[in-house]
Image (cartoon, rainbow, N blue to C red; front, side, top):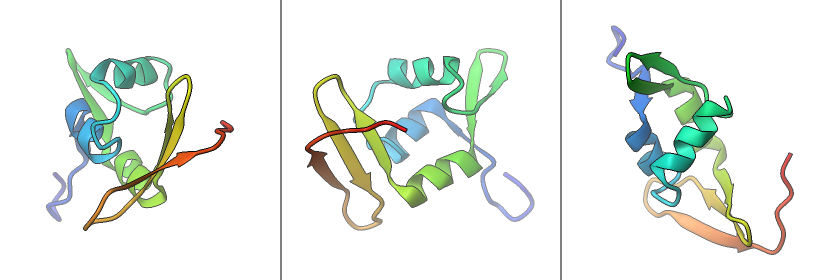
Length: 91
């Protein structure tokens, strides 16, 4: 935490819960980290994800896809909403 009490980093498990609402596995997150699709800092064996990235994902919502279906997750403090998309285009 910095002097204002704001977090600087989140663990992989925290990002799994906060950003992806538990809908993807820890292994998938590690695969994304290894591809540098999620920024990280490694301290020995511990992987930390910057708070700026985590907060950015929460603010804009997150699209996640399996091989046959895509979902869009809208950020909400009171209710998590997940909608099925007819098609998914990755950018």
